[in-house]
Length: 299
Ligand SMILES: Nc1nc2c(ncn2[C@@H]2O[C@H](COP(=O)(O)OP(=O)(O)OP(=O)(O)O)[C@@H](O)[C@H]2O)c(=O)[nH]1
Ligand SMILES: [Mg+2]
Image (tube, rainbow, N blue to C red; front, side, top):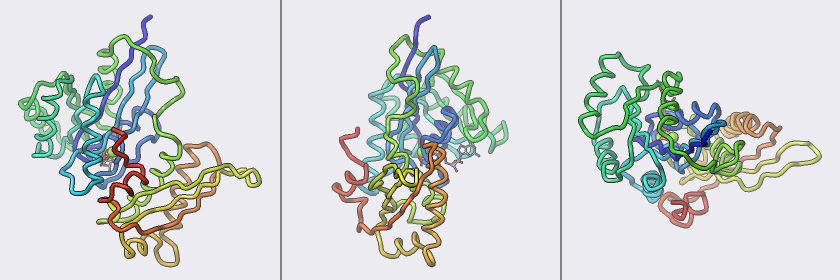
C-alpha cells in the first residue's frame, strides 16, 4: 500500500469558522476560536495522520483589509500559504452574501493556480434554498474543484470533506511523526489559550489590543505542577484596568478558565500566574510584534 500525503490551506474572511473546522477534524483544540473577527493571528498546522495518509492542514488568519502592522502580518501570512500547499479550502459562510472581501480573495486564488475547494460553512444557520443560491453565486465566480457544504460546529459533512481530500492526495512522504499534531511549541498553545479567554470575556477594542507572552514554563517538583508565568499585553492603561477587573476578579476568571484548558492540553496539573502590562500601540511596532510572536520571518 502506498502512503499519501499533502498540504491543505484553510483560507477565508475572518469569523467564517476556519479554526472550528480544523479543531473538529483534529478532535481537539489546536487553534483558538471566538465570535470576534481576527481571532487567529498566526498560521497553525493541524497534522492529521492515519496509517494510509497524512494531511497537513494549515489554518490561517482571516483575510481582511489591514489597518495595523499586525494586520499586514496576518494577511501576508495567510496568503503565503498559497505557495506552500497542494490544495486550498476556501471557506465562506452560508448565512452571509458574497462581499468585497470574498471577491478580493477569489482574485488571489485565481492567480495562484492551486486547486480550490469551496467550503460553505455554517449550513446549520440557513434554509436549504439559501444554501443553494449561495453555492450558485460562488460557482459563477471561479472554477472550484469541488463544492462542499458543512457545519464545522455541528460536524455535518466534515468527514465527507476529509474523504474528498484523501481521495485527491498524491503519493508522498509522511512529513511529521504520527504523534505530532501541530508545528507550534506548547508555549505558543498556552499563550493562545490565555488569549482565547480574554477574547471570550471582553468586548469592543480589547480583543484586538491583546497579546499574550509566556515568560516561563517549568515543572515544580515540590508541587508536581507545571508552573506557568504569562503576561497579557494591552495597549492602554484603561484596558489594563478592564483586564484586571474589580478587585482582580476579571484576571482571576481569565486565569481559571485558561488553566482548565491548559491542563486538558498538557494532561498535567498547572499553576498559572498572569500579569498585565501596557505596551502603547504595540500593534504598529515592528519590534513589539516580533517579541510577541508575530514575526515576519515566519512567512
Ligand atoms: N452556527 C455555526 N457557527 C459556527 C460554525 N463554525 C464556526 N462557527 C462560529 O463562528 C465563530 C467563528 O469561528 P472561528 O473558527 O473562530 O472562525 P475563523 O474563521 O477561524 O476566524 P478568524 O480566526 O478570525 O479568521 C465562532 O463563534 C464559531 O462558534 C458552524 O458551522 N455553525
Ligand atoms: Mg481562526
